[in-house]
Image (cartoon, rainbow, N blue to C red; front, side):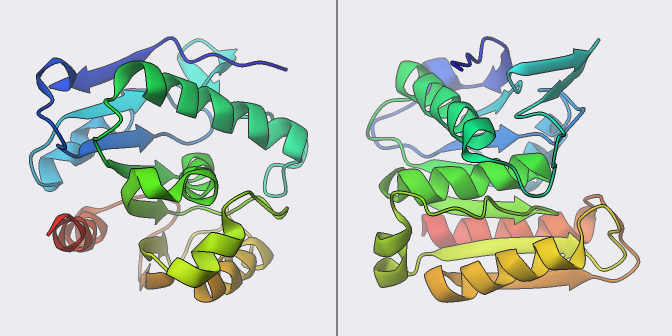
Length: 208
């Protein structure tokens, strides 16, 4: 199945300077492209785009893939969505602009997918309340060698992502990246100012 991303909100894409980083925001299941846009107020100033996932669930609710087995998707579910994001990037972002990718929940899985398929395009990877696809991906072997820095944050009271899914992501991050992992007490399946303060510190360091 071929998917296409046709809707997004953005700022500054028409003014990207050579080599300038661009932030890419990937929302969670049942949300839309407007869901994460306010997070840019916490991050270093840069052009950004927040994409609408390609599968429509209902009015103003979208997903990167369906909910047959939400925390353990198949390749047939994950790979078309991954390719759709890369196709959008190729059409809208200059090749020399590194990406700062931030994904929440199902969008967090998509952030791992971008890292695991074309890591050379990413300057920073932020996974918030996310999880991962269990199968092998094209850049996994290279990531084991390069061990890029990644930020993974989740609420300590997040009941939406199972312990098994959290453990699988942590195990993978430990063997393939130099992940900064943070658990936030009192936070459920959400994002707060504490999270974004730490994300901003990480992104600022990655952009040098």
